[in-house]
Length: 94
Length: 416
Image (tube, rainbow over all chains, first blue to last red; front, top):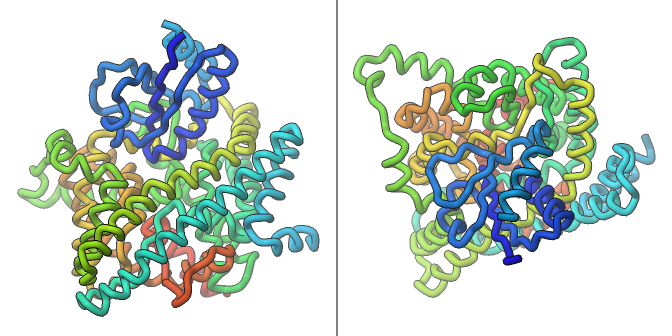
């Protein structure tokens, strides 16, 4: 499988995205997905989006993009976390 | 108590790893992971210390030259929230803020005085920061802890109060934003917004977030902001081109590296915050409660982004023209989205109003940040952060300019 590029965007590029990155990293290890995870601020997304396979964001994404976007908010609230993990795994295995 | 004091005396780089290790074990983490979490936090502090050194050893002399050569009295460096949060967590209050915050939240939930289950442990640093300033001012740890607890309670109430409007505006059902910095501007924004409704002419003006974002887009990239501001400060300080370009690159480096260091700190905190989140949810989950989150979840909204971008140049101009201000805005130019995250929904996404309110609170905030600079610097020194010779004075906008923090500080000083 090719290396998957995942961009995780939040308000700071540090706070909530670190929590999400940690969970997705564990998911990828578990599922044997070879992934490159980058974190950034939402306002920097344009600079990081090139060649990405998936965007996970914990905040409101104002603009449309060609790359699939998954809402990572459940990782932060803890509600619906399993469903989102499944969704991400499916998207990455496409 | 003497054991706790002995641990507190070890200094942040040793104290926090030990405390986080103990807390992780209490929350049921395996010893190996708990140890790693603790050590990671300690490394985060070492990293932040290095970058603060880079910042103050470059921007410090430039700020002095700015005073001498350009007549601008901006000799207090805005170190930004990454450094402020590290100072807060490394303080004596910071060491105890997680149990304090959880206890306040649990008591308020049990007594039905709040509906917010605040799972955003990271942002307990705001409460710790207030406590650290109070302790630095009064020399009294107990007063600092009381201030942190009061801060926590007020912010929970503000989170409850704004939950309906925040949920609707951002499309985030079931959540609230009990954020120490963002929520502090709610009591200011609500009356100002009502005032706007009453002023003929002003109440009709709207600015479209899309066009504003396009025009100011590059200001959303902190490294570029760091580069440009570094060069401009260098030139104003009458550096030659070579030195000005070098200052620009150093500042771009600070903007890039500082958040990376805080990320290390956050990683170390994950096991504790995840365990606390599960604990809180197990006991208080359900439809009648809001889940309290970091206001970072709101900062991606177009009107919040647009407002923040426009406020970056305004902040710099204000720093120059507001009489009495001595703060040189830098680190927190990237933090303005958090200042407006809860103002934007109150203004119903009207960028014009958010910008005016933002400019007002920044103008006053710069004076507050100037006022707390000596305590801010003291708190940093207390937390064992190192400053180069010549003792640079530091402050921040988040939370050095936070009106709620300042009011609590002034009240607690009466008792100190």
